[in-house]
Length: 270
Image (cartoon, rainbow, N blue to C red; front, side, top):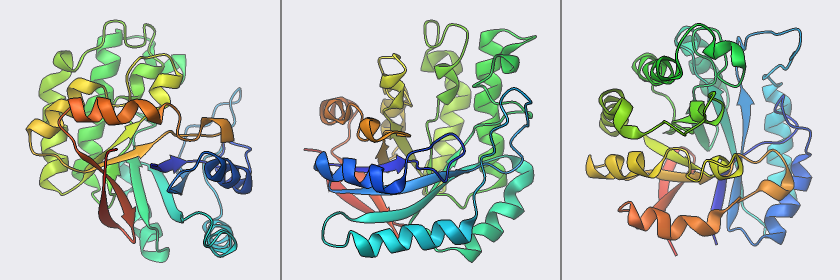
């Protein structure tokens, strides 16, 4: 069975599930292992209608996850990860955090672009959907050029979850010049991409990123893919993972990746 290496618990500002409930669900589903990757989004834009804070006490997080590793030893391998919400001006702060804590796995993600989260309608105001998507991809390039201490880039086309028309008019080809540059940068840096199945949950019919991006990543020489359902509730752990072996093999992959102590280990897709 697979590892699910992108999940959240109540250390994330948008989640109230206990880590124990997530672990027990993973055991019930027969997973080979999991990694907690709770949100650390410094300077997340405040909104009086949505006052979510995506920061946690790293000392407490460190203690809780390592305690659970010991508690569930022999029952389920549990890795210690984090999802960093990248913004160019946060590079030094992220570097310091990663120096202070020994994570197994670091996801770099784009949740905020020019001070706005594409989750909210305000991100799309005053520009076309195409312009909004294009700016999102350009922000990823800027993040990669500013900060490289991550293992994979998370949910690369996250923006299409929330656009006015979602993925109705979206395709890799419309943004190929920017996306190709993102993929080349990741490959040159030895970084991977996450295959995030939450997109199925949102009704998109494809993972993040979509199949054409996965195929292009492979064509360019990319090999590192981690798997994550981005679960915030126990029932969403390993969401639609049964679709992945065929889908990823069709995209040219024969294995997926798990990071332990920031080192890649490869597992066959089966």
